[in-house]
Image 1: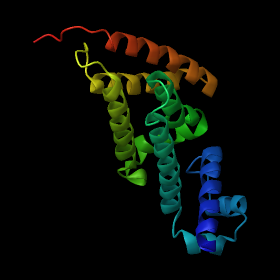
Image 2 (image 1 turned 30 degrees about the horizontal axis):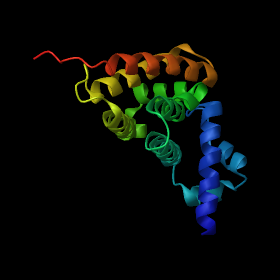
Image 3 (image 1 turned 180 degrees about the vertical axis):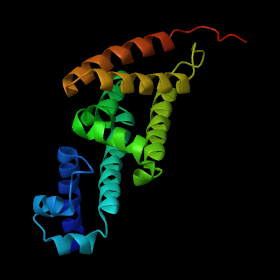
Image 4 (image 1 turned 90 degrees about the horizontal axis):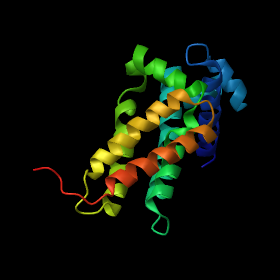
Amino acid sequence: MEDDGRREQVLGAALLTFARYGYKKTSMEDVARAADISRPGLYFLFESKQKLFREAVTRALDADVEAARRSLTAPDRPLPERLIEAFDRWTGRYLGPMAREVAVLRETHPELLGSVVVDYPRRFLEMVTAAVSADLPARSAVTAADVARTLVSTARGIKEEVTTRDEFVARMTVAVTLVLSGATTRTERPA
């Protein structure tokens, strides 16, 4: 059990170190120092920088997906509030250096993150679709999938334009309000 705690500590320190220096400039020595572990001890836990990076990102995404799921499935809260909180946990916390680093790595070294860059966004989109579907009127002008895809695309765009998490949440609040008000208008869908 002690090894699991140590591993978690190292993964947390690694993610912060990669965010601070970038993947290419971060050495295993940098991570070991940040995690207060010896370099051989770090290599005992993680055989390569690539595996350490992938596991640190995966661990963070697992936590984000779980936090978003809890937000989206909270039955006692209105849908707009749940959506805004889920998007903040999924996208808002990744403003800044780590978001840029992951985007660059995804484009220049897609093998580094593997299927992570496809699997986790797909899971998040499915959760948003399910939450919207549960609240969308049966005779809505759009489908829950339309609403979810629009909100995900909007979140990506907002993330590129703002510099703070508060700005992200404020802009997503407007987006959620507008998209849901248009989606909940009861109209016949064209045949």
